[in-house]
Length: 183
Image (cartoon, rainbow, N blue to C red; front, top):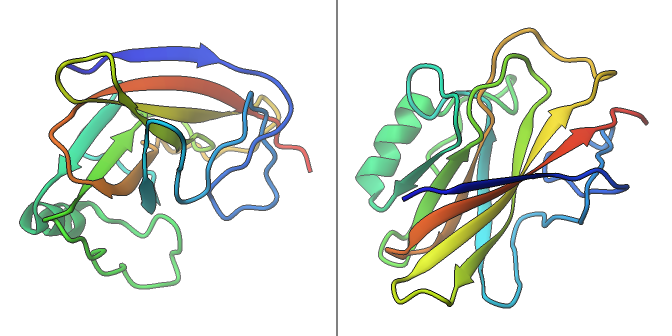
């Protein structure tokens, strides 16, 4: 079962994993760059960030896709990996994964009407109050502020991470921040 909790936070600073130094963001807490380490936290590594749907069509709600085999991962990557980040380079090769020990999680915030939206995974928490394994993915949806320039093309922001292999049920905990777009 997938549950979603949303909170809106407006304070003063945020670290962002995209490679843009020009953007500034408003957040309630700093976020991680590539690897997260916390008590009861599951380590993860950022693989890719994109803006295209994880499946064909409009996706109004957040969606998780989990890859537990090289064949699933290769098939998905060949069909859905686009040149989102760097249009001057060829499509990157499928990232290597040891599926005996690891799995890939793709998370999308759903389709948005314009550019300027993005997603970042803050941490993965292993819940200890359940008899069955359960993870809670804490993520941030970054929304463009009213003064931010945006493209007029709909996008579906997503992120792919590499983490330890598990059959844990996964729930989501979202917070939203608004980009200030000031330099």
